[in-house]
Every structure is written in C-alpha cells, then in structure tokens.
Amino acid sequence: MSLKQKIDSEIKAAMIAKNKSRLTALRAVKSLILLEETKGGVKGEISEQDELQLLTKAAKQRKDSAEIYRQQGREDLLAVEEAELEVIQEFLPKALSDEEIELAVSTIIAETGAQGMKDMGKVMGIASKKLAGQADGKVIADKVKALLSA
Image (cartoon, rainbow, N blue to C red; front, side):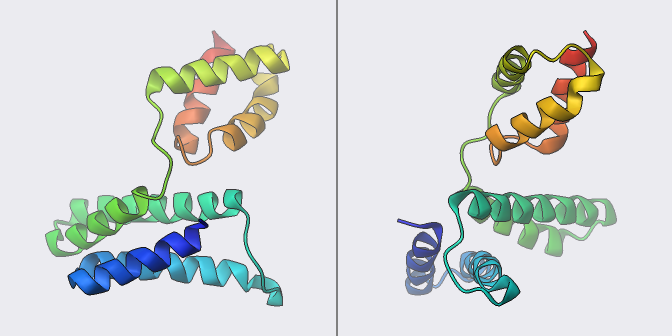
C-alpha cells in the first residue's frame, strides 16, 4: 500500500472519529504528496524515497515552527505544530539511536575508505541516502565529522 493510500484511509478514519487536529495534519501531508505528483506538469506516482523526503521535510518544518513558538511563548500554536508532527512521525521509519547512527556511519566510512575531512562529502552523500528518514541530517553530519577527524 502506497503512502497516499495509507493517508487516504487514515483521513477517512479521522473523519469518522471526528478528530479535527489529526485530520488537518493528514490533509497537509496529502496536499504535499499531490503537489509533488503534479509538479512540472507531469502527473504520476512518486517514488517511496520521494515520499520519505517529503515526510522528513514536513516533520522538520513542524519541529522548527514548534521551537519558534516555544521561544515566543505561543502555547496555542505550539500545540498545533506538535500534534501535526506526531501524526507525520507515524508514517516515518523508526528513528535510529545515536549508537546505531554511529555504527552505520563508521560502516560507510570503512566501505568508502574515507581517510579524513576531505572525504566528508563522499561519506555524507551515501549516509544521507542510507539513513534518510531515520536520522536528522545535522546529526549525521556531526557523527561523520567526529569519526573522520578522530
């Protein structure tokens, strides 16, 4: 079942349950998918990797907005962003722990034969694709820097 189909069935369930905040978040995700599918005048299915990138981007936007609202003391808007983030995270793969990220990055470094910071781009390219949706890009970059400079 594609992400779009899962979202559609969850929208129906949220409508039946009259869960307004969940419904809003699901509709936002569906809107992102539809926009991506029709981007550039081409109509068709998007790949699973593109779906993952969309969800990751949407989750990051919600986190950033929530942090801004937290700093400004806007509890009403903070609650909305956190509720939407929670719904989006249901469709993302389970986040990796720091140890799992470090193990994956060290494996990639060993496979590529990276020697130092000059090889960071090569390692980051592979790590970003391999760990997409499972770890934040900044966390991956920090791990790569730490392991390459050690």
